[in-house]
Image (cartoon, rainbow, N blue to C red; front, side, top):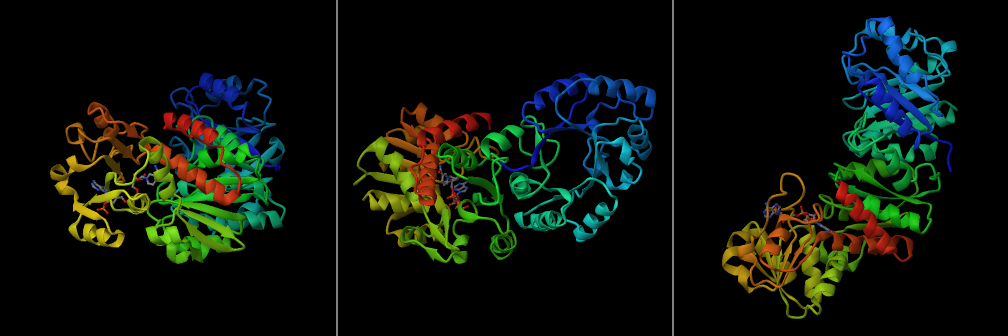
Length: 506
Ligand code: NAP
């Protein structure tokens, strides 16, 4: 256990809603932030002390059994509404003592030390990382407050390096500090901060009710990432990818770490610039990194940064797993095995099976490699004659321009979708083939796992063709990664239950 606190940030439009949410937050929180700037301005006239007091009294006059932080943030500093300086002054002089107060830098000088249990001086940059972060820290320190909080916006994981360095400095200076890198690329700071000396990490009460970009729910911080149990020796694993908003891997792997009671955590690292990640992030942020999963768009590009690549990953030309051993980065690929295992379970021996693989990216390459090993007859359907021809040559299989699918598709027993068509979002209603085109096939295997039932799978149902969904491969390749990293058997049923329950909420 570390000493850090989970602060659940509560935002509500009315006093009654506030009270209800604070009571719910108390279940997870060590401390609760009340974002009074969320109150509906029609009910909460901040220019009028007589109007403010009954609302605040109504909210605060309960024993919530947890300390409270009062916050009243103007929009330009991350608050909900436009609030004038006059309104801010009236609010803060309304005199609510014995709580914590979070004061933005421009008003902290006017806050009275003796009135508050603990004063936080906070700085927010919603647009990026200010160059003079050290100076800002120094300025906030000179205000004499109890706690300094600095939140910056990270567009890439490397943007969060300076805030992590500040945490190291604050630890050295014995100053209570809350570092936050907002945005998806900064999520790791919210997960690992407590284990490395941050005073607290902020969390949302419910999904969809985040009060800042990149905030996780308190339930996920506690149950999935076990943030209060982590320490400086915790082994760090994670997924490196371009957009990880729908990844299930943290839930699957953390469930497995928890099952085996390992001092390990698996974190999403949203990386735009791979070069920066290897040359700066891994060098500057000295954590106990042990391994990574790799996903779109880095599976091929990552190879040049690794010390070793195993034979399977080399033959596929893509790495989805990195293991760090004695400081060496070793690239492997579990996609091929993860793909073929559920297929063999559903279809049996693949020797001589006629398989059409749609797509020519990293996943398709792993599928073709695995199918060839099983002696299946493979044809790739992909866009662009040149790409199709070079892939056919590289793997020694047949390949066809995707536009010719109508003419050719009746020849196949098994059809694999290794394109993103059907994925939640803009492509959700798309499919590589319709029911009419699928008639006569024996099995459809869609690698897309979110949604669980894709358009292609629905088309297959209409054509009475059995299907395998992408979740099967996701679990199988993830289980193999877990075994490579930990040398322990993957608790596959536990991983599956966790993935399915999360998928239903996405
Ligand atoms: P990738 O490297 O980006 O390759 C995607 C492939 O799909 C490319 O060949 C691309 O063609 C093709 N494509 C994209 N849009 C298309 C369209 N509208 N029509 C036809 N072809 C299209 O991605 P990947 O890593 O191979 O992954 C592919 C899919 O498999 C993703 O949805 C991924 O989530 C899924 N996947 C699932 C698992 C699992 O465990 N279930 C594992 C790996 C991947 P161009 O090159 O011409 O754009």
